Image (cartoon, rainbow, N blue to C red):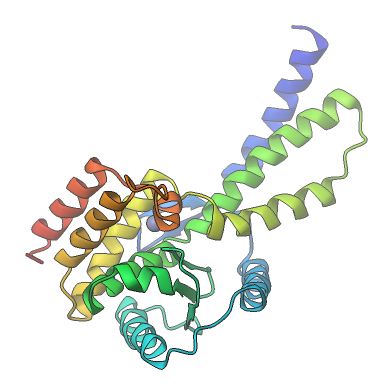
Length: 257
Ligand SMILES: [Zn+2]
């Protein structure tokens, strides 16, 4: 073992016990997840991201669109049982077929998506799925995974270079990026399955038709062959035939259809 291998081993050995002590059980998912960010940090970063988005995008003046999203959104928020969040729903006047959620219950729906979602049930599928990502604490989990990877790489770099890396800067960078991921970068396949399952449960409890989730996602996938490329919503929520099969079987086994 040369010096480099020894130092890498030390760096990895230092990270593992630290990471192992930071898991949290998520009741909605029935599994434990890596959680390296505090609720206070997430709340603050979510609020910052929300304010930024409200400045960058134009909120629609179309009252019927605003009312539709608010009506459906509040019903889903209630059926999800996540009363700890101050849920807010806005419609951005933007042709993109997109929607996203922040961990503090702030939801953005783009008017382009409303043109595609054919009815309240399909909109409930979108918002239910997004609420599923909140319950799953998926953005926090992803940020934590990024931080763990960054800490591992960072410590290795420190060990190899004998210092010179600013840890505080690295942590802030990874944490900030982790939040951006919640809006801009794809969720994992596992996160998609979990959000589908929770989302259709919320739909059913709110008396929407969970089968419309299948209609919506299949429609989304059909659009990805178009000239404009896949809808933005699909690029952050990757979908394929396998995922649709899992969604279908959850709907069937839950007695929703
Ligand atoms: Zn998703």
